[in-house]
Length: 306
Image (cartoon, rainbow, N blue to C red; front, side, top):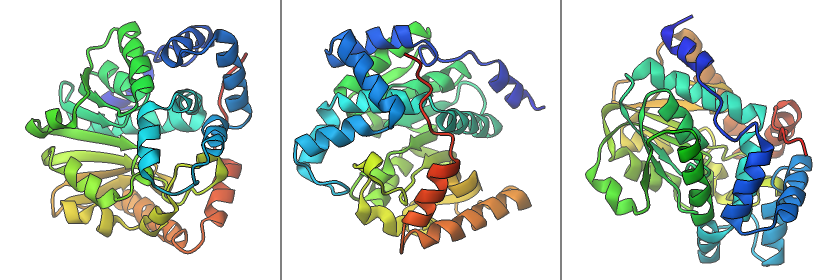
């Protein structure tokens, strides 16, 4: 086992992912809901991940799978995302994704390297990477999520820089950027990738997870207009000078380098990249087969015991 993998093995669990009692108090403070309301909401999320956001969008009569100015304001102020994000972060699927991201960064960068976690919600990924020794900057547009994240940073005794203004980032350069479960929500993914790539040093690492193919009532804020980008690395990443070097199945996650001549590191990596690209390409025409299979086999049930 490599030193990087050993580091991941002994890395402490991020508080409070496995302590629901603490989480309930923090969720109550961050969302200004009573403990009873928090417990009931978590129970609903444990039964059906995404139900809180889906229900609220319906009550607000906002269209599903479409971007509107109201949706942008909703991202910034909604407390429902706090519950969905916490529930998602307790799943085995997210735990595996977080571990893969950590291993990818440790293979490519020394501890102390500057990492931007863009759209990191409750701050669990930023905390995890900080515990691995990286110099992490956190950015999240949602105020309720940010309040919770600050509690996470404090409880885990990590020094994570909190960016509250995107203009602050324009004067910085990062060795790596992590952008998980964000691009499928924005109206112009290539434009956001381009803006982020400008913050990356030459030879830097960009790690993304963007399930453009995942259109389902449980993820009502995924944009159906973005399904056309499923499996299309050239349109999303190549135009910004990013090239694929590794990937998990269905690009979960996809690791890229800011280098025009970068190639997959070995044959298995190339096979994972190309096979996943082939599967994802079908989702540009119809999403339900991929959604049905992944929802059947994925370990995405929240692990919340109340």
